[in-house]
Image (tube, rainbow, N blue to C red):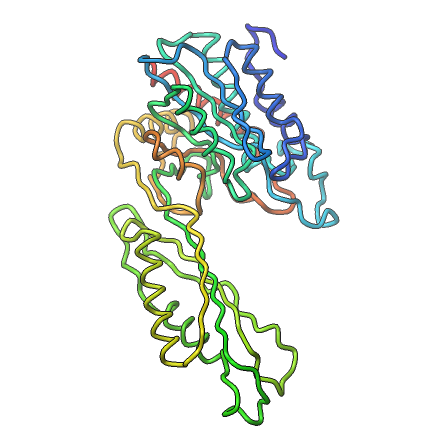
Length: 385
């Protein structure tokens, strides 16, 4: 590890993390690398493991009434897919023409490396009147049941508190610095099974075909306008993501049919209100077609917003100072662990350009890693100024 007067190289740290094949929920030593770095800088580190998942909590400074700034992120990554499709080693962290390649380079090991490096340099160079907290999970890309929620459980149990939190997920769609996330849409998935009666397709009156009922239900759900958007959110969307009968025969009416829809919803709705609407639609189709319909719903997260204010202004000023761009405040995209942090404290997200995340040959520009560390460092200095 670097001497106390040597700045932490976020590129080298990113490479160390990428070489850990931490496909969710595996850790493969990634969090231990960060633990060593943070402990050497005077952070008090603790493990908030749960359900076989490794989660690292680290705090510099005394807990209590002093103000605290928190970072949140994850070191687990999605699977690589077919390794033959990669032109660079998925866990090699190889650099070519100023670009580092590897799974997690964008989402989000470079983000974790950047805020860990910024935090270490900051507390060594200008020890703040307050606390800096780093909370990193190994369970974000999967079910996320034992990741950041376990960290929050640990914090509550041990009297730890963030006053504000920055999640280092990739947020920029095109250029470094062009977007900050101040909220996220909610997400939920509902699975359907329509149960009819199997029969010969030449004698449809002797069967009860589940397909017309399913098609009518999917059409009603997909063609319904959920809303027209709100002040900070785009309109909610519902997508039919699968319909299946598992029926290879053309002369057989199947006994059942399955389907699923995914809804990304704004603050007009809640998971409960949308579940109630779906239940009403199901009841009508059930009666109209005389079929049984089974449903199962998973609410991955509710919509949330951190209204524009001191925290978003703090981050935006740092981004503009380092990139020259004025970032848009947005709520677009999928879900992130900010959906858990929002119940603890005000939270925003800022990170890299995310164009290659989850793709084959995922990569990050070396200059962007350095730039991201500089932004995070400036945010810390401005917060504790």
